[in-house]
Length: 464
Ligand SMILES: [Zn+2]
Image 1 (cartoon, protein in one colour):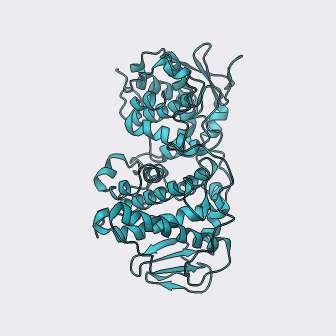
Image 2 (image 1 turned 135 degrees about the vertical axis):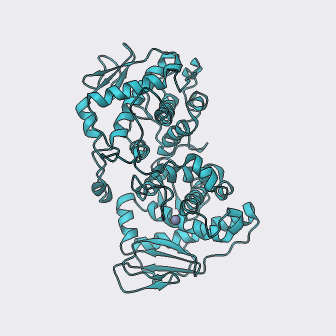
Image 3 (image 1 turned 90 degrees about the horizontal axis):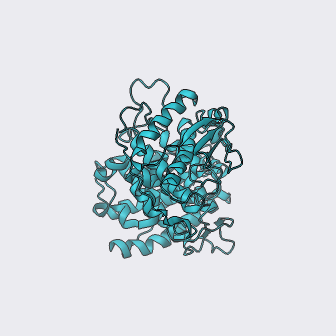
C-alpha cells in the first residue's frame, strides 16, 4: 500500500546546529527555581476563612496576579472592563462546614469558580496540599489560573460563545487556554508574584494540568469531562502561544476536529493495554513500514538484542544504529516500561514504573523514525533532529488508525501515555540518535502534537 506519511526531509538541517526550534514559543530555555518571587508584594485580596498555610499564600498571590493580568487583557483584547470576582473562600474539606453560593463544601476536595455568587473557592485542607506534594507549588497557580479562566468566561459571555447549553469540555478547554495565556505573561517576566522557568517551571505547570486529566476511556461528551492530558495541554499551549482571543474562539465545532478524548472501543477487554512482546513489535514494525513507505527510505530492521548499538550511539532500552540501519531493542526492559501506568503510585507522588504500552511503542517508533530521517539525508544528531523525531512519532500516531493491512490501533489513553513519557526528563521520543533532547517539555510535547494533528509535512519544515 502507499504510505500515509510523506517524509520529504531536506539535507540542509545538519549545519545550523538545529537550534532554531529549540525554544519555548520563541522564549529562551531557562533553568531556575520556579515559584513565588522572594520580593513579591503582599497580595491585596480579601479571602474568607484564610490561613497562613503555604497553599493559601500561593492561592492569594495567584489571584492577585491573575487579576493584574486580566485587568490588562480584558479591556485590551475584548474591550471589556475588568471586574474582580465578588468573593474568595478558602476552606478545609476535612474541617468545619463552609458554604458558598454553590452549596455546602464539606468533603468537596476541589477548587472551583461558582457562577451563582461569582466566587472562587479552594480546598486548602486536602486538594491543594496534595497537589503541592505531587507537582510542586506551581500546581496551585495552574489550578487557580484555570478557575479564574471560568470567571473570565462569565465576563466575556457572548464573546466566548458560552450559553446555557455549551458542553463542559468547551468551557474547560477555554479555561485551560486562558491559564496558558496567563503563563506566557508570567514566563515572559511580567508577573510581580511568580518567576517560572521555561524548562522545569513550565514542565511542572504542564504536569499538574496533566495530573488532573480525565481517566482514559472517558468520552469528551461525558458530563463534567475535562479532556485527556493531550487535550488539556493542547488548550494550554494554544493560550500560551496565541493569547486569550484564540481561547475565546474555542467552540464545539473546532473541538470536534482535534479532541482526542474518546471512550474505549466496545469489546476492548484490556482497556487498551497490550503486552510488549515479539508479536507487538511485529505489529509495530508493520505499522511503521506502512506509515513511512512514502518516504522512499530503506526501512530500518528492528532487532531483539541488548537495546544498544555495537560501537555506536546507545540509548537503551532502544537504540538506532546508523551503521547497519537497525533499531536494537531490549525487549524485557520495554515490556516493563509498557506495563500500565500505576495511577496510585502517580497520585502519591512516585513516578510509575510502567508508562503504558503506547509509551514503549513510541520509544521504539522514535528510533525507527531516526532511520527514516537518516535515509532521506536529514541530520539525526542535534536538537532539531530530536524534535523532528517526536513530530514524526506524532504523525505516525495520527496515521495509525487509518492504515490498512496493519492491526495496530490507537486506543483511548494511548496519546496520554506518550505525552506523559515526553514530559519525563529521560524520554527517548524527542531525543536524537545520542539520546540528547531539548530541555523544555513544552517544546517536546508540542513537536509530537504538531505531527499528530497535522501529519508529517510540518515535521521537516518546522524542525529543518
Ligand atoms: Zn474547570
